[in-house]
Length: 166
Image: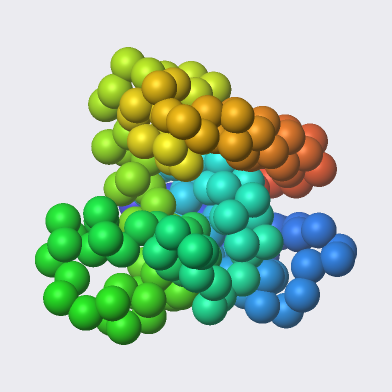
């Protein structure tokens, strides 16, 4: 446990981020990477999703009602997670820790479906487990392609994001 904490501190001290990131993006990204490693999730996938969804920024809402850094849908997830207030949901989804945990919960649920295995996980995050039958399949495929592109770019340019304690 102590070794995990020391490794995480060393990881965070050495996190290098894209030079064009704003202070807000740097703050949020550092927390996403930290939480991903704590939760034993892929920091590159989470960063790629957040970058694709909002360019890693707070106070974002889509026309479909998706909210926060990771664009979590309030109408679907809010009630399932016990939220009674859109305002509280928005506050939590704009918080990098809560937002990352929420995105991980969505990803873990999606991974339960056969249609969400492997490189299809981004399509499922965007369109749900029935994404392959969606009328928006072209948009979903484009989204998944962008996530894969950013994930690969982050993996190539920032190899220290993944904790060595995994």
